[in-house]
Length: 476
Image (tube, rainbow, N blue to C red; front, side, top):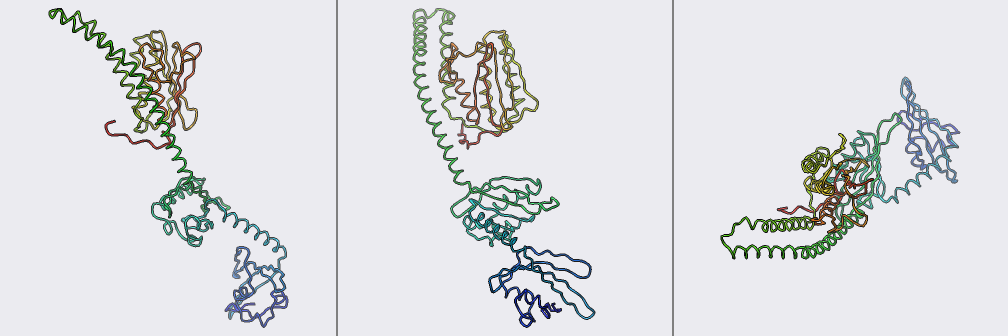
């Protein structure tokens, strides 16, 4: 029994035996002093309840007797108020089963502690206000401070402002959605900025209310740097391939320029000779020669412009492009040209066709080229071209250009430089289209159609290319 000052004033024989102390040794001590001297610990959270005018406090203690025997006791405190003063009756009951449960609890705790110590990243829990209630020991390895530096504190107490905003934003998303949230967080550390892949999740009570936010995070800085290095290597490889292609184009252009230049020279000399022989001769007789001269000049102009387009690295100005009106406008532009050749162009574009992040000018060049190729392949109708779209994946969109022309021979690779079946083709159009599509992070392929014709399929990511884009140079 405890007096009003919470000091022990009485203990029966069973209590003395259970505690291993005589009444003389117990008198005058508070329970906390007694527990401290005995080395008694509280293994379970305190279960407190109250009823009527007699508040009840129930908890448990465990300690080791001098002979090495573990002892586990349930402690029940009841405050009794009399007319003169209050006193507390303490009931002690040994719980044999608690021993094995406590041993199991200790084993689980050891396993949990070992797991937390060897995490490849960090783990933590916060209350709804963002105050840390638990952090793993690995915080010290990564951030230089032990767990006690964080527990009980808010993000603003331990992180710089730019980090606090990131953490609070993702916390708010967990609280609002009640779902798992994943984000990449930038954290300045002693050796520079690190990137952490964080997964946060709600921890609920029995009523399903979110009471805590749990989180685990892994440092992905090295993986991110490796990925950036790989992308840089890929860009370097593409640049080397482009230089090799430019070299091949240059050699081809030198070859292709030789005959037209010789022809131009002959035509100019012929005109000069005719004009020299008879200065009064009508100019109309020279029109045929001038026409051939103009034709050669135009062919050279097309060749040089396409060479310039291919040799230039694709630098994109990305912005949202609404595909349905974009493709409809492309088709509208080419319909008069197709109609003049008895060719019809049909569109099959669903109303919910998504927006993509792309360079509209470059994308327009690519689809203009595909539609133009189909018109030139059919040449004279009747013939038909279809522009269709589909969504093969939630993050990608496919646009197809199909025709019923003669198709592509099996031995022809339309994406190979200078590969062309058209009398005045340069063989650069489709390589330029592929270059534009790949710069957007997309893919292009083709397949024959039955009974005749060909289909070109362009797949584009809705969010644009995943790699960093080179800056657009002034004047481009």
